[in-house]
Length: 422
Ligand code: GAL
Image (cartoon, rainbow, N blue to C red; front, side, top):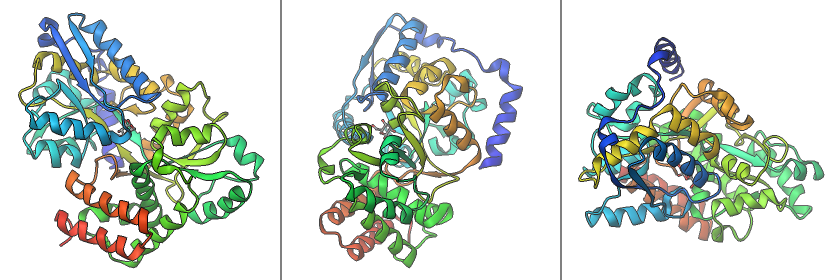
């Protein structure tokens, strides 16, 4: 993977002249009417990033009207239900946000809901500027099905430096270290780990699995080479269970940003969240390194658990020229440079100017280029919707009953029913 990235960088170096500011797509220039862009970017940072990319779009295509069809709810939990209803009613938006990986291939491509975009890739020279590691995750049978706008990192532990200092706590490199500081924090009346509604606990689970199993062991969960019923997974689930005893008691009622706010307010010391949290913190006027700190989630130093937001062209899209205009901006250097520094993500493109990014995002750019990369479960990379939803059901039961053995057995069954484990 690393060497592929280097090859793509070398190719890029030779193609700098072609790495252009966006030229308005010929179809889009003539297009008029509304372009309805569907996402779940409504919180601080993510909504601002979308607005910044919309500005680029509106300047480039003044005859098109951007309609923001965002549906609130982190990780798309609500939005994707609304989208499914619209798709079954034959009413797709002009373009929607989908995660690179199994969410895209195992759901929308499998259902024949989106169009290949190979011509758009050719016209814009995107194969020369998108990471080679990403293309297989958005392709099937030689067709490329989406335009990635960013790379996010899931395995980040965010913290409030002042709270750590006041409590004599340090940033844990392992979950054992976390459990030790958690006791002190709790005794001092500070919530050790802020968490929100159920999807944020799946997000925590995937980072614990990665920290416990390592890159190969974690990757093996998704191709059947790691035994879900084995002792390594038992140990990871036991750690997960222990960690959960240190989260805020109102977790199930909080959105991801409300959980992150507990850290901002000093009510909690840590939270595990994707790096859209950087966008959220910065939207509050906070400064990375001073007002908030970060580290790889415990046990995941050197590992980059990634996901990528991308946009698609629906089959039977209303205003397809307008949709292609949006996709052209989403894949452009100008669009990505406007969006990502505010969103709290790094560009999918390899040619964005790192100087535009804050200290956290510059660290993410460096890590993306050197770390071992694995995919996120919660954000669509490694499991299709059917498998993920079976895991989610098992997780919901576990959060209620705390039965590790039953949870592990349900996870093993989910892998079998997905077809990955025979
Ligand atoms: C993820 C998405 C991110 C961010 C986050 C919280 O699924 O990829 O872009 O929006 O949800 O809403």
